[in-house]
Image (cartoon, rainbow, N blue to C red; front, side, top):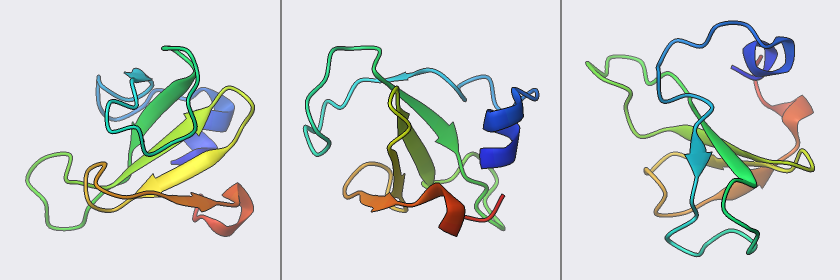
Length: 81
């Protein structure tokens, strides 16, 4: 997923690249539009599943496996591309 985002390839879901609004308040506070969200494929899921990457304008990258209930900040170099 990160390779596709980095290279601006077409993304698999229309929702990919949309604004993540941080309604849960779990990420550092920034103006609306600062964060973008992207689907991380969930094997066996018939839809987008629950896994997402959320990327801030400064490049900080967060992963959620539980559809925004919790986040882990990741080093993009550690995430499969």
